[in-house]
Length: 465
Image 1 (cartoon, rainbow, N blue to C red):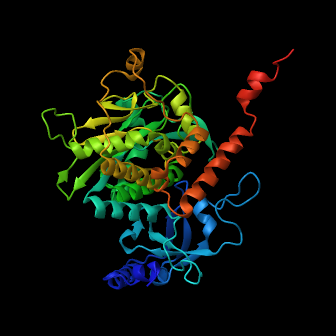
Image 2 (image 1 turned 180 degrees about the horizontal axis):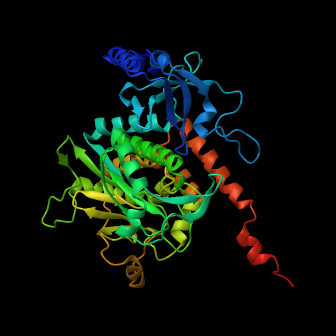
Image 3 (image 1 turned 45 degrees about the vertical axis):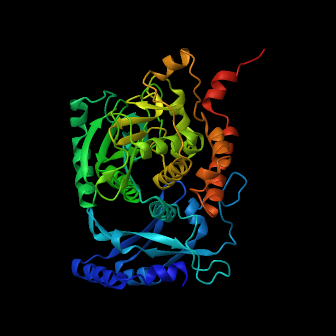
């Protein structure tokens, strides 16, 4: 059978579909968002009357391939990823992701896995390789089958709540002052926080803590860690929740990495660990030093350090991302090294059994970043890579003392070149995925390079005579 037929005919699936059909009828659910994730992390899909859920679950819906690239055109007028002549994908509902929206009891959402059209002559009904969400699921399953380990991840989703104008458009002004960890600033945003937490809990996010960060209107509200694909789904859900709360309360949730200079950017650090079963964290120390991870952890670090240049393209995926790295003094992770509680390095041991990967910001597509991390750690385990000793000094002091440390890429163009040159991390974007991602991001970089900015005008308008 093709991938799509195996997916639809999986054991127990029909009973799950029928149970959801009954829930829809019993609870009066009238509308359904059938959604998937684009190359940039946007939530895409179709809306349907909920009474037709069975069709989406048993047959799927059709949509143009280019929707996986936001159906954008590049600066030359060509559709990114797929042209107008391309076939249509098929999206099939995943029953375990069906969930009623807490802000609208008549509406539900369901994530969908994407496939090639059944009628296609080449790979008809196969998994669609430009489905970043499906890719992460499959890459993770292959890694687990190979090593007997799975990646658990938590993320730190920083974002800024901005004021909206009379027309509801965002302004470049935060709702609060940039006072880090101040409870009074946190209290000013409590109406927003309460509603985000309420909706998050209703949609399966185990909300655990939060604080006001050191930029205007900047919050970090954390939910508990889990398997990589579940954490990626929950980050997407969290973003949807923030957007809804902003509509309800007249504020704008901003996930742009660096809307303000002179204050911290919006990061999205990934805290990661590899587990053997449910109870055995293989990143835990095994020797006399309570800080040094066990051998699996050290090899995993080795893989990530080896591939940091290319990983940066997935974790810092926009032109604006690199403003975060250039605005000095805010603990941005610009150096390819690791250490204990060392915020000047790209990777640090934040607690026994947990690594914090820091070269990632709020614009990240988590399905791509986590797939990249899995591939890097897979290489580290296979090649038994040694990351070298941890750097306990401030990295700048270490460099002054003579240590040779590479910087990570400092703009999107450099990062794209690093990704293209790294076959290991490219394998996290299989099939069409790398081509679509590079087309989208290379066009973004070229559009920026072809733009005259306010800085250009201010700097050069009266340059001569």
